Image (spheres, rainbow, N blue to C red):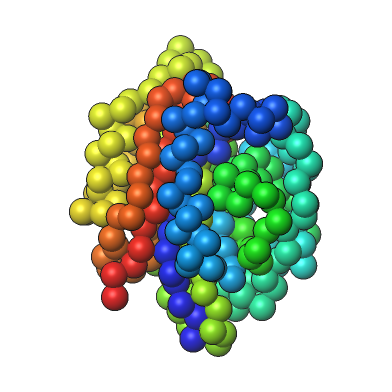
Length: 279
Ligand code: DHB
Ligand code: FE
């Protein structure tokens, strides 16, 4: 059966795409951010995942306000970038792991999670930037399965529901008849708010507590309502739901191998965590 070798959570601020495009990795503004990814890149070179299951939120590219699935999964043979711009260079298409996609669709439906199945899908900055941060040469050595969680239009799924989705995805991966080494990636957050009176809002104390909780008390955030989470993390900081789903997939306990937290990147608190399941 397939094996989950680790989980990575990272922010996905669009400005990162522009910085990559302009080669600003050693610029004083960007260096503390980009340097945070080096230990994770080294871990990936050793751990050699075959497949990455990516929890991310689509920002209006596949799903707009007229049709908004709470949870959706890609089952496509390949996924291309069709981002909104922001200076991200076009990245090579990502190859889908269709066998795992369909195994997840079947297992999750059986487990009472009925995801919208997308046989065609394009991916935005929330997918491409984390991949480009993990594999800067963009010669993707992995196949992918994208899973989208709606954080764009209310009502949003509760933190508890996202945690349970992550758990169900973890069980399904571990029951996949394959010897693949699977990694889970969650993208979004941490605290930020792009609009309204609180635009620019960042909550470092909350972010650090949330990061700690993923190791020490992973259901901590599930005890907060969506409105409480928005109050603490900001309207877009609610993207931390992806981190929770990723953590849920990793099982009972995890070891923290690496973390970076840097504020601000653009108007956003950027975070990075590498977690390894403890058997
Ligand atoms: C911005 C957009 C995002 O999707 C995000 O997660 C953080 C920041 C932005 O437009 O700056
Ligand atoms: Fe976002």
